[in-house]
Image (cartoon, rainbow, N blue to C red):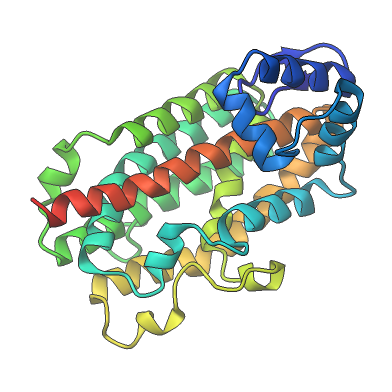
Length: 296
């Protein structure tokens, strides 16, 4: 079974069927498929056989984990890093407020996604991993170890946001669409695809990202101690900065292990690509929210 990285449709044939499907959508001028082709295959039109061979090359890999890392770094940290990452090197008050407002909605979906993954498998090591994620992201351990969500809210409050406003403010459309996509993947596809959709995204804050070829990190580490951001911001960023290395890389090992066991490596790759596109739009929504708050 193959899966299209754009529309996520299942295709019963192998790579040739996948290539023909995407090629057909190109001929039909489908915008989503054309965007994917331009980003991952070629901006130059070719005959169908050549096109299929190029599609196959996109998915070829010796290690799924390394393939995911390579694709993620290339998209968000390559020659032209994502503009939210650029803004986070020395973030302004409104960049961080936009982060707080939109990420609240992301984290609400995150715990639902983890719960859906748990419900889709009986494998205990996967269930335990996701339970740990739910606890750290949403519950924490009382006042001594606040949840990631609690630290996010405190960051927003440190810049003048009211907690009730963060809760009551409706997510922007790109965030809504991304959340809807992640909810569908985690509820209706396999547990491995759900894990791939969500946990590949943790690479964004992986402090080892420079070891994977990125020219910069998620933020300049100096801001954690130089006073350029609030103490609450430093605590929020430090928690993710320290934790996500472990979380993301353990998850990638599990994803590789079970995608091979279930023979769904390519569908997992397709889901990772789709999730990265939604994440791209969602990161832009953080900036958009910040601009709205600044101009309010």
